[in-house]
Length: 284
Ligand code: G3P
Ligand code: CA
Image 1 (tube, rainbow, N blue to C red):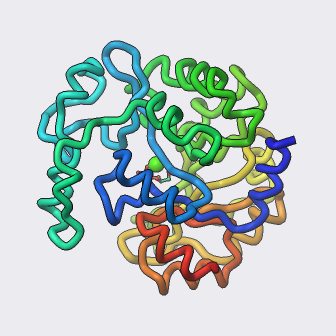
Image 2: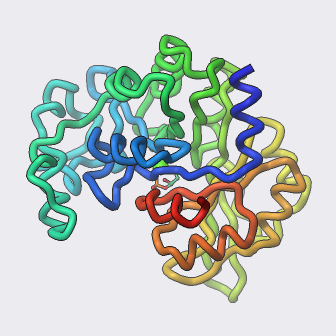
């Protein structure tokens, strides 16, 4: 089945376009997703949140300040209010080398618009962002995935740092392949590194097979960082141990060629990047 094929594909290498080709066009806009799709990224990565009137929108930050001409928390606005914002001009100002007048006035995308545009021609790597700020997010998401037949057709992965959010999605539809996001950070006490994901007690970097198996019980893979403030916090052993426990590993968010090559050498199963063109060049 297409869903089985998708899970099989997770064993090989996946190019994941982080918020679209967001190094080249304003993140989470149609322009960024079109570029990533055109270049042949395996997955379009996106964060979903819920508006004051219950619509799902593609947006990363909790507030609209950084990537629009508005201010405040995204959940306080209705879709109509959000649609009036310009989510492209900030990019031109921040990235004069990649600026394009076509980006001006870019509108916040709804998940429906993204699905209407690419349909089953793309695969989507969807993060339930800040679930505690977005009550009802999982229900609305699963409903939309089912409406567009995205699950059985092997078109979607759902990722979250919040284990509870993933388990909620699984309760609503247990065919949705899930990715547990985790993060490593340096300990303040010694030079070890700690590993954490939300709802799970922070632990040492020495994660055990039993820890991995507990994730493998509900998830199809793991998404992790490997550096923190430029410092290495993970290694090839973590990747191998996860894989030995049946969990493919995707690393976020890698934009430099050298770092991409290092991770390819480690044998990771995928990389989230704002520059899918660079990564595609390396893997082809
Ligand atoms: O979803 C993987 C990576 O995107 C997690 O970090 O903050 O970019 O959503 P963030
Ligand atoms: Ca994300």
